[in-house]
Length: 206
Length: 164
Image 1: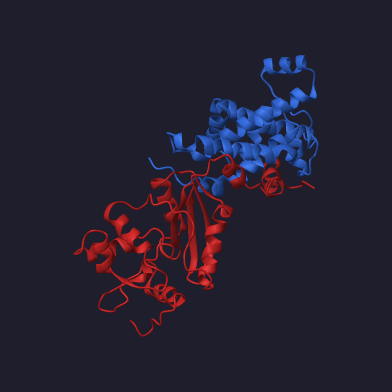
Image 2: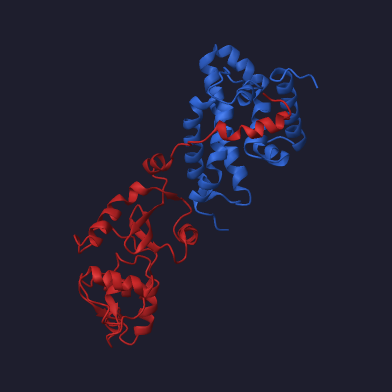
């Protein structure tokens, strides 16, 4: 049974049989109020999304082919709290509303939002953006004006590019006044899909 | 200093912690000890001032939970006087050493004296160095080395019937 193997080798060889199937801790941690940032990965028609929420509300939506989840989670650890845990059930309602949106069954997201990653002018631009109704379009100049800086189109563009909650804060509804599509944090192909969900025929717009 | 997202620790060390607990407290209590380990680590995490050895830190928490568990179990298993006597000597023994579905060699590890058992589990389940074992068990590196050595010697004798 043990011929030819040292005791040390035998101990090491049996490691996998000792453990496995460690229990989940997310549920207990949530119940104890110890999860400052809960996150889940959600598959959508515009690719994998990382959704993160604090007890106050949704705080981050990230396209995962961009920065990658490690970088997004490190940023959340640094800017919100290092108590970051994968706790998908905490995001169930957010995920359900996203699914309804992509299925054409929801026009307004009704989830609490935690705005703590947005400040100053950027926050004002994103608040103005959040008020653009489903199916409507606005321009960089218009949201800059609403944010209190009529000549700040470029800065507004930067603030929208840094939107921590794309889709839910609908920066895809902001386009150039010239009629051009402008830019998008997740790439223009996604902006087209999102505008398509909202009934725009965008292949012609570009 | 920026602490990494807690989930990163859980992903990197969760299975080591679980195996360590299965080997030290047994399968029956490993689930509870595992939860308690991570919950108490999560509670303390934002106040952590040194992130240079997070693996050592979490294994230390697991080691403390295992000792608590074994103390509680030995209190349940024997008259209080005996438990106090034992505590006075400083050893915490496993109250029983059922095979517990463990591979035979690891079931034998469970019957070792507590310090040897812990040292062997850290060494061979989590791949810890003698210095890391010393840090987790709050002993000198020499004592860690001795605990591993004595544990192996006893296993050779009692499990393998080998007198070398």
